[in-house]
Length: 299
Image (cartoon, rainbow, N blue to C red; front, side):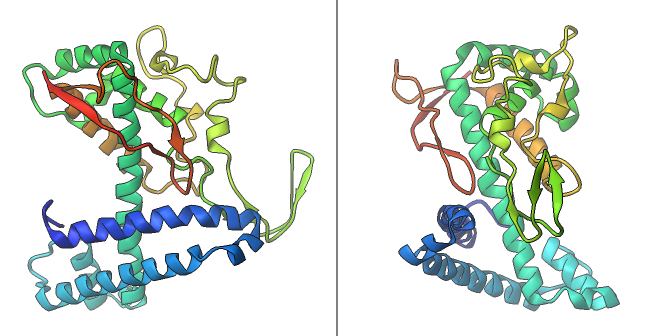
C-alpha cells in the first residue's frame, strides 16, 4: 500500500497511463494487422512496459528485503508467504507476480477513474439529477456519517445514476478481445477457430430494443414503480458470462462510495459558468472523457 504522496506511486500511475494511451493502437491492429508497419507505437508500448516492469521489480526487491512473516502488509507479502509455506506457491514466480501487480493497478485505477470522471461530468450538466441524489443521500446518511456499501439498498436513485453512466459511457466500449478456440455457429454466421472477437458493449447499452430513447440520460429507467433497482441484467458494461470482468464487484463498490461521498459534501458545477461540460468520449482501449475543469462547491 502506498501513501497518496509517495513519488513511487505517482511514477507507477504515470507509467500505467502511458501504457493505456498506446494500448488503443492495438485495437486497430487486431482488425488491420498491417497498420503496425506504419507506426512506431508498438516500440513505444514495449518501452513503456519495460520501464513499468523495471519499476515493479524494484518494488518487489524492496518487499523481499523488508518481508516479515509475522507482519503481512499487503498482497505482495501474502504471495511471498504463500511461496514460503506452500508447494503451490512455487508456480507464482517474480515474473507472474509483477504481471499481477500491473493488472491490479492498471485495472483498478485508470478504469475506475475514467467512469468517476464521467459521473461528475454528467452531474455538472444535470443539476436536477444531482439534486435528487443529494436529497436521497441526506435523507439516508443524516448528519454526515460515512457511506457504507450496504447503503446502496436505500440509495437506489444514486445507484441508478451510477448504472446509467455505466450504460452510456462503458469504460471498455468493445470489451476485451477473446480468442475463438473452435469453429462455432452464431446467428447464422460461422466464426472460425483462431478468430479474435470483441463485444460491442457500447452498442448493447444503446440498443433501442432494450432501452427507450437510449441516448437520453435517465437514471429512472433502472427503477421500478416502488423505487427499487430493476433490470440489472440489462447492464453489460462489465461483460457477461464466465469471462466477465473479475473486478466488477470492487469497481461497483468504489464507484458507488466515491460518488456518494463526493455528492454528500460537494455540488459539482461546470468549470465555466453557463457552458455545459463536454461529454464527448475519447475512444481507445478504455473510454475516457475530455480533460476539463469542474467546480466543487462545498455544501
